Image (tube, rainbow, N blue to C red):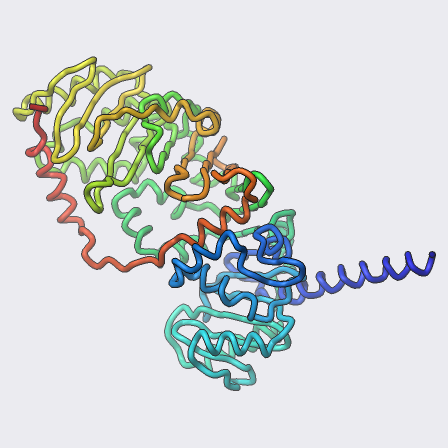
Amino acid sequence: MKSSRLLTFVTVMMLLASCSNVSDNLEQMIPEDALGVVCVNVPEILKKTGISNDGNLVIPEAVKPIVDQNDASTVCTLLTDIPYLGLDTSGKAFAYFTNKTFGRVLLVALSDADATRKTIARRTGGDFQQVEGVDCIYHEDNLYVVSDKVLLIGTVNRAMEVNKAAQQAAIILKKQRKSIVDNEQVKQVINAEGDINVYLQQDALRQILRKNKTYREIAQKLPLVEIFTESDIKAYECHLNLNDDAANLTTRIIADEGSDYNKLLNTTLADADAAFLKAIPNSMDYIITMSVKGNNFVKLQQIQQLVGMFKRLPFIGRIDLEGILASIDGPIAVGLARDPHLEGEWNAVLAAKTTNPNMILNQISSFATSMGQAPEIYDGEYIYQYENKMIKLGVTDGILYLKMLDYEQTEGYAYELESVRKVFETSNIGFYINPQVTQGGTFTFGMSDHYNGKGQFIPTEKGVHSAQALLKVLCSIKPAQAYDDMLDDEDVTSTLGTAIDQLKPVE
């Protein structure tokens, strides 16, 4: 009996040691100066998503139809290949970011290196070859290396000869540089309890975002986002836990007390208030809000840029936008939903808590009337028509709103969504994604102060684990398309400048 217990104890300890050694080996390959690190708890992720089934790696039955319909998706491609990749599923996998040879490096432990080589060779259409002492394939911007039961995938920052990329891969695999494990702060973050743990320096976030066309366009048109992306924030910490009924995300912004970011947000942020949800339809795809003290908000460099752009617009630039923004004392929010009838168009609602909403309403109405666009007034709302949309200006519970919808609203308001309301009641910065967008669940995120945030993904389908629901959402995402005909600044100015001429009362 004693020997049986001893055998069981030794077996468990060997398994734990094996798991630890796998993870530690990969962790030691991450250089100390990495700009960011992502740690993935592989066994937990595979178990919770249903990919690991009785020791076998399979595509979950619930996900198969989505994979079949989205074979171009990166996640679907990975799911298709995962049973044949020869992965060691006992430990953790890591990704890290640098501004050197590789912008991004993925490190994964292997149990069957030959299977890995065959799968990657088939997927890339190439053959592994020895370059600078490493067994690799260089395909497009990625170097695939298999060495001593480790898979390294490095995405180069710029095009280069294969031998240079291979040299750097060899240095990583041989652990010739000081490791991230010597950075106690980063080590604590990536080894915390969590299915996925992330540590990103501000430079890493900039590096990721600047390569993203969508972000560049948003930053150009909405420079306020640069408060977070271009400030003196040091780093971001994120932890994702996939529980049965919800996926929970916690975030922390790391910034010095004397930082410009801290000073700026301390003087700009106002108290949270969910009352603005009474003006936003519950059908909006996205709701984004930030509670601000308007008199300080308008002093921000980014807001001054927007005001300057607005003033240069013909006709409509005469409106005192700076005065309107200065009167805000609480949430300023926008709800957005894709126009189902016109591709590329959006239905939108803007809502703000101001100190004098009726004054602003009258100012806008007077301006429109002076331009020959007198509104129809019905049930306290000022109503105009613009192309296929009806524009309504009004006030409810001290909240000034502007609705630009291509339909007559019959649905209720987001304030009636209890889980959403509770988030915005305590969040001075937050956003919400409607389940009709994700096709799998509701996502909310809120920051109770300018350092700490909490997010939650709740599956729409009852009884489905949050990990599998998220996997289905990821599998449904179509590959990004490159659009070369996006509007430039002159096009945007021209479009906004002529909009007032097309604004007319409802007939």
